[in-house]
Amino acid sequence: RTGEIQKQLQELVFQEPKRKRVYALEEGVDYSKEDLETSYGENKTSRYNPSLERKLVLTRLGPCDDNNSQYIDRVFQDSRIQSLLHSAKSNSEETTSTSPPGKNLIRTSSIRLPSSPYNLLTVDQVLRYLLPTTKEESNIRDPVIEEIPSSFEVAGHIAHVNLREEALPYKYLIGKAILEKNQSKIRVVVNKIGNIENEFRTFPMEILAGEGLDLDEVDRLCAYDANPKYGQNSEESTVQFKIGPEHESLMQVELKEHGCRFQLDFAKVYWNSRLQGEHGRLVKQIVEDAARKCSNDHQNQTSPTSIRECIVADAMAGVGPFAVPLTSALAPHYHETPIVCHANDLNPISFQYLQQNAKLNKCFQGRLEMYNLDGREFIHNMNHKGLEIDHFIMNLPAMAPEFLDAFRGWNFKIKSYPDGSTLQQRPIVHLHCFGEKAKCSDEVARVETQVLRRCETALGCPGCLSSEEKREKNDVRIRVVRDVGPRKNMLCVSFILPVEVAKVKKIVLIKTNENGKRERGEENVPKSQKLKISILN
Image (cartoon, rainbow, N blue to C red):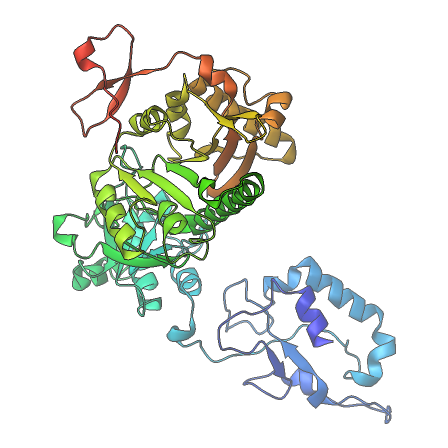
């Protein structure tokens, strides 16, 4: 019976590591004597036994009121609790033999538990206790926290949070709680203080707790009760300990993902541990597709040496979350499913770590080719080299759809088979981007069409992806990767490159003086400014 009730009330039941939620009636401290009254009067046949009763501890929703013995916590007002109590009252006549005289089998009660040791509390529990979540708990000048900021991303020994504006006055308190509850693996807590606005996908950060920060200063800023000026408009809420050159060694991390080791500078390259699932999903999809094509080639070819490798082009490869597991000699598919990856990133520091991670994971030359080029230049380069690309990966959510213009005027290769038949070689494009979050199922089609039209505009082929006929012909698939905000999702759009792009006029790339970046130009730009696409050997 206790287990059934716990299942019914699972969201209301007390949850705390290493703490019981079910107690025998005689256990605990300071029980209400009323619960133990067993005065039967003339009823000498009652089978009521206090030792068989249990108290199920619920999560307190209201403040503790030691001065009011009649205080009833608002958790008892929950409809599920009320339903149980009403049901027990209706059946009271049938259960009087196993419950105290005049009382229901299920009834409200109270129990005083010993205070929870700090080391048993989670980050969420600590912050719920310390941060004001209602106007009654907050002073006039202090913001109310609507959502407890207890979640964080971990990259090696770094915990990364992205605090909302309302939480900024309490940022050092939040950082200290995260650090103290994860001391075995976290050395520093950082907060993002700007958007990803540059082509390298990096953003400015500040230190909230841990190494690189004066602990006495953190304690002073966290001393909320001792500092009457502390609040939304105080100087303390705007103080920032920005990450700079002096923190370079602290930002060097090593982590593991899908059996591969990655080294990187968290402040200078783009890395998001929350995309680990997406990295694994896409790698698995490409490997399975390569294995299927390899099997088909074995059936169609007479010589094993004529089996073609699966070729992948990663235009925004970063430090290699896709390229490294696809080509590592330590990967289980390495010998049976040959995959060659051409990986590129514009950020020279990302390119250095890509090379470093390739060595760490035994990604040999011939299987992994690396480039430090602009994304559009890289895509043009792949076509000029005459490579039969099977998959293009474009993981640049903020701008990837606009880079599709590099496929305009694409020169499709023709694949010949022994039986004399031919097939146009069309690569599959996997593109990550941000999209509007659909409020209901009826809006999904509208949001998807919106994203596909953005892709069509860049490709220069209106209707080549969004129409029902073209979606089926080009195997268009859209999936939500993760929730990134109240109104925004990260999406993965996969499609076979439409044949219509071959007839669109190819864009011209012109030289710029900034970080080797290439921009679109017009056909009539001076010849000296046009980008010469070199064939990399």
